[in-house]
Length: 125
Image (cartoon, rainbow, N blue to C red; front, side, top):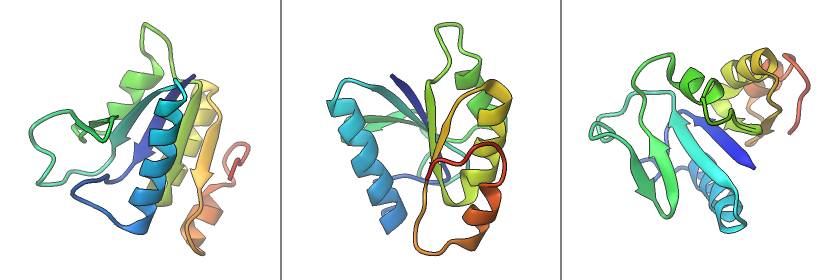
């Protein structure tokens, strides 16, 4: 399965609970033979040198708003699944519905905005 993770920031420079949880999930998927890429949606001064691999997970820093479209319209096949959380929930839900790709949202605490953003398309939490 091809998995696109649309996340705002990622480890190792950003290691809050949401990022460590997402990383554990994505790493586990890779270990089970799935193809996973993380596309960041937010510029960060530590992510200026281009793509990197963290603990086996390939991560692509933010370049511009069209970043996820590159994966969703890839000639070698779009993702089978989008994984997202927090501030990327709304955009991932919209793009998933537009491109016909199911979206799984990782819910952290009682992040109310994510709950409201789940109203687009079918919610998988």
